[in-house]
Length: 109
Image 1 (cartoon, rainbow, N blue to C red):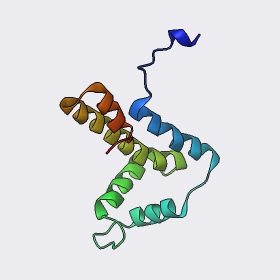
Image 2: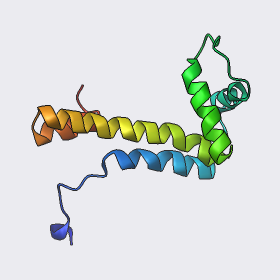
Image 3: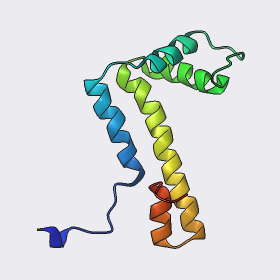
Image 4: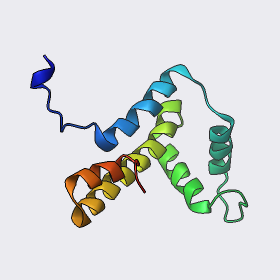
């Protein structure tokens, strides 16, 4: 059975979307998420603990898709998946395949 499995197949960046989806099914909001949602309700440029761009993006995201738990958690998960994909793609442009996979997985800096 395991002989037919492609050993080069890796879940890659898409695997980072699974934990937030599963946690949205079992866990409630964290206090940090509620804080960001509250700040997104009144965006300003003067926050001392996070950049205003992240609050504005969250506000636009919630205006488009709502404010459910899954919707709020998908945005950072998608950003993380995009970052992992781009890191692997850029490393692949510069290095061999093995090093690219290790860098995309965060195993080596």
